[in-house]
Figure 1: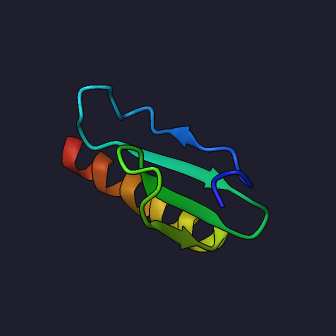
Figure 2: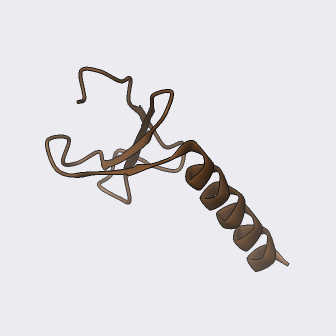
Figure 3: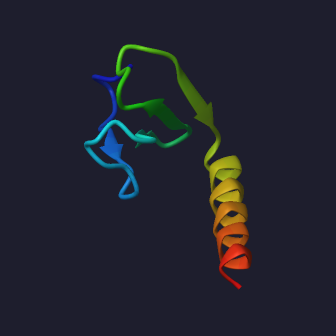
Length: 66
């Protein structure tokens, strides 16, 4: 599967072994994996579910900043 999609690393990830997440998208699926374990399992979401998650996470982060 990793050859089929282009993975990119989260802008919040660093190279010091922290919480590293990579995301790849295809027309019908968003793929998420741990960048430290590229051969490991992936999570898959529909674009709608991923969009809802990102919106929720953004709102939660904004609420914490208040």
